[in-house]
Length: 332
Image (tube, rainbow, N blue to C red):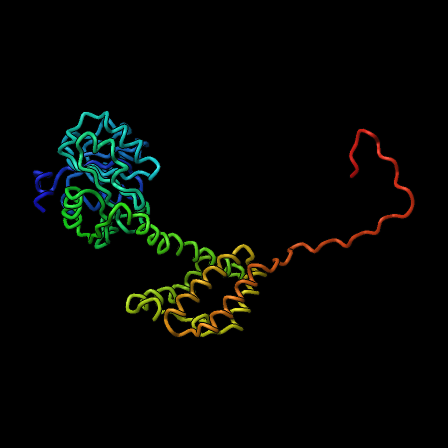
């Protein structure tokens, strides 16, 4: 805490937000709600900067990085990962007291070193990644009580801890080497869950259910699953045909997905294999039964998918000599 206090002379330092997308909005609203003055918003799109600045009462809104408010002692770079290094390099041209400033990016996968150009100017650089799915409809409660991944040197992490506490967040301190695995876990938990539900939706649409009715149908199942996971380890929460060793059901499912949703065959097989591993770890699936299930999945992904178009029967070659082809054409 003392390291953080030596960086910020005020309990609630002034903040500048670079990037007015979903995460920038969520952070700006949370900062304002917790008493941090938002002094400026900078975005590639001036209209977005002005809109967010108006919501949080920031006196500066601009589409130029050089308009960063000099009194800001905390700068959030909430731009896409691929733009962080360029933004950091460009910010070095701004007349700003970098040695008195903490600069944080919000990438889950990149280390604090992505802000190295600003570190060279004397700034304290920090990776500050809220572990939350954030949309453009974010409000001040979107980040309430979520975890934030912190990474940087000791001074930066101390600043991040103080900031997390000030914003009412929980925190996890990471090393640069651990960040990719941390982000991988987040991708499995959030991005791939959305992908899975997209696949569920495809199946339900084939039953003539519209999107809203389909979600209404599975919502209790989703909530029940999450509730089980909140109280039990995945090995204990697992249900379904795999953990029961129900090979007949697995075979029927394989035929169903290959017939009605062929592009999903690899995903279905891969997920089933991972479920088999989980079931074996739980001690509820006999290893010999697991081998049989793995064999089913192997056959599923190696068996040619049924063709959607019935092939035309081969016509017999006509008897007799073929007509001569003109010399400047190819046979058709």
